[in-house]
Length: 366
Image 1: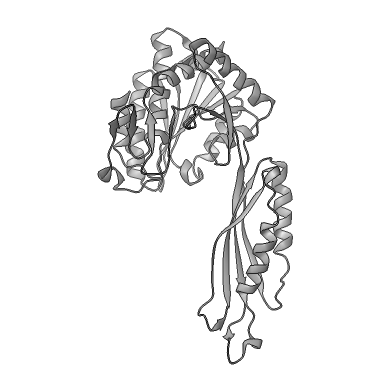
Image 2: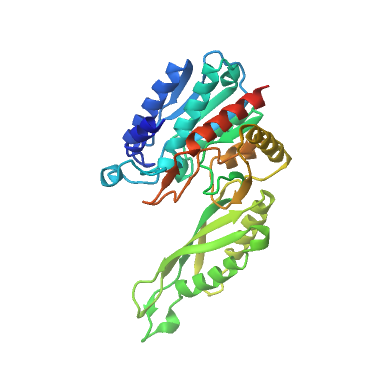
């Protein structure tokens, strides 16, 4: 397992590096085919290809597993800090998010085969190429293949403390563009219409929509505007990040944001609003709780205490959950510091999480 992880980690596969992602995909394709799985390659011109995989003897599989092949790291990162092992930890770009998860998934299916347990025929695997940038090409594939499934197991890494993920916040992005009128701030400021002033009003109004108790966050994280310090600003732009905990909050926020941006506080300025709330939340509903209970029972049998947590970050779990499929995320091995140069994998968790996954697939297939 470690040798395959090393091979995968030592391939640059940032979201925009198609060649690297496709190289990872070709290695995994070969590994699955060796186990008798059929691999359908969904070709992409700009981004990496997506893979849809199921066993040649599969008939209407009820479990969908999703694992992304892309990382956040640019080309050249591997040359700077390739895979390495120090004590019980492995390091390298994407080592836990989520190249180790690919190896865990592959070996869980291999273990079922070697044990003569045909549950591997009850799974469909999606290996997608662009999760780190919002699953632009793969979202439709995930949603289409989720239909008719009973369970979704998402292979993001477990949290640092070993927790599975039972809920994630959804959200989206908006861009607010304000046009004003330039004027010399010393000679004729009264003739200007400040886009920055108008944007300041809008930022305060947008931030007032935040309600942490309800899991709603509206954050203007980036602004730009103006042409010089002695000019009334003719233009300004704000980039807004939205997070929600329940799907019902999406329409409420959409209406409020549009209402705020429909009128100007500064006469003579004009506002253009772009964007939407594009990622649904993964809600901890009764289906999720039931699936968690199964995984907890499997964990007890093999001596692993299973517990879960909520997180604000997004993943493909949101898409499977929104289609009505019972979804649990964080089924990969334990590690931490994802997206940083200190990203690590807890090596001892590789085998125990592989066993947990294999046994869970078996139990859900009975």
